Image (cartoon, rainbow, N blue to C red):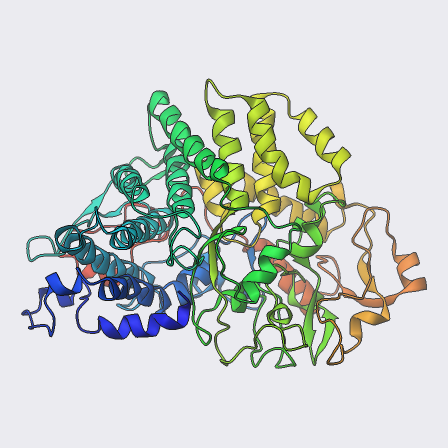
Length: 622
């Protein structure tokens, strides 16, 4: 099943699947009754595709959730607020700098992510109810697969609602006149319901490649259902901010319950590992090159991706390498909206193979690479690249839209399964640190030389030390994938880690503390500015950057390389545009306490239309 078939699926259910607001309208007679629709595989499949349609709506995952959820952290930063006069109130920047207001003009309408996520939930609710009644799900394996997929997708959407908004309305049945207005429900109640639903879904969905549906990473497999259940369990075992209490605390007060959540997470991930249905890529970049080339064959590192059609989606647009204008790869002048924090490069071990893939100090301009210091932080994420979509030899694809890139959003990959298993095993009272290390080692073996893996793991010889190692390795592994913020939230470290990161950025800008002695500028060889002719390997970097390693100095750089503009420097000419952007980036990294503002507000449009049932009980408008 590929994403282009989805158009057919959506058309088949046009007029059948109602949004929340439409559900209260007078019923219209359908050309087909529910017993026919949900007992016929191709039509039931179309119902699943109705949920995928909600993912791709303009202001849903496509244009709001994927671009803006997940920044700012210690490894991810919204790059575009350096020139914004008032980031605290800007429609985009405020979503990143912990200053979102309920009247945000990007979000405060009936077409935004909140609306589309609940639209998808209503579609799922109706389909789940009808599949139970008419779908023959217990004897027809394909119908069971579709039923399990519906349960899993609904759980994924609800998990995204909770991690972005905290407590939200609980809707697990089709809307009625009696249930149109609902208050928020404690997130713990919702997440426990998701654990139940995902456990049920596991009995129906196949492993990757087990059936025609699970042959693609764009469809739900048992690996994803189990991995998602592990994510939900780890979130429940962790902390979040409770507005009514005005406190950051454990979601579950009982240590016994928290241990149960770690047990669930460990067991689910262990099942995926033991199934051997997914594997790590031989090198770190393989997974991301496949993502850019739209290789969606299941059984590799990618476990589940939200599919976007060729002319839809803003994944690379916001999380990839910046292209300052149109060129041989793209009709866009996009990319680089979000990038690595300026300190992330220096946090990596110099021998970590993930560093040079993740952190890119250049952008494309006029078909050539240029040092991007003028953009403030000067960094782009390199996991997603327009130039990886097509290698210049007819392999791959090109961007066909002037506003979207068609790259799927990768929700989960196998490295996360291994690392969640290791974390949960370490947290269990009866857990084995040796077993936990063996799972983490699989990820680290791909990143470091063998001797370094051995020494790093040997040093993490206590439960607390290993937990810290997990936290560090998850940063290096998943930077730029919108996972880090939720990790920091559940560990109760969002505020403290962002405070440390802000100070590190100040130290880097002033070349003090850990960054004392680093060059003021960076330098590059001539290959950086050369156009890569058609027929050459566009993936080959073919350049050298000098000035980013400990021990580099300006004198050597000037003597041997081309000199860049000043990169991320707070000291200098007050009129220097780069310096002004750097100041703004640091000063506005977070505008309020991140722990108290970890969740977005429910937008005013929905508060006003809730008949008094919905309120924001967080200090959003301070």
